[in-house]
Amino acid sequence: QVRLVESGGGSVQAGGSLRLSCAASANTYTYNYMGWFRQAPGKEREGVASSYTGGGSPYYADSVKGRFTISQDNTKNTVYLQMNSLKPEDTAMYYCVVVFCLDCSSPPIRPRDYSYWGQGTQVTVSS
Image: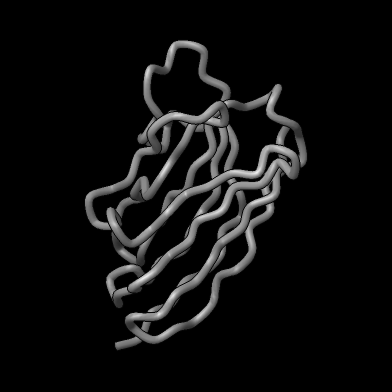
């Protein structure tokens, strides 16, 4: 079992920045991909960003490319999501996810690909 605890959400005006953090209770022997999803009211859960703990090119949703950056600190079992130039449409509950995938050639991007989910942290962007 892996427990994920997110932090860093909050309210910000459009154009502002937030940095989300997610600490995993287990080390990287139990997962090799970490990522973030989000879900706005009335909308489906959307993959925002994900990356391999061993490096390589992360995945970003088109809607956040150039504005969001995912990073990891494997010594702290922590993944971050730096969110810049925030827009009202970024308002959502953000979830941290991890999975151990042996046959993935790129970061998984579907909700069902991930085994463990955090409780979520709310991000609200006002215009």
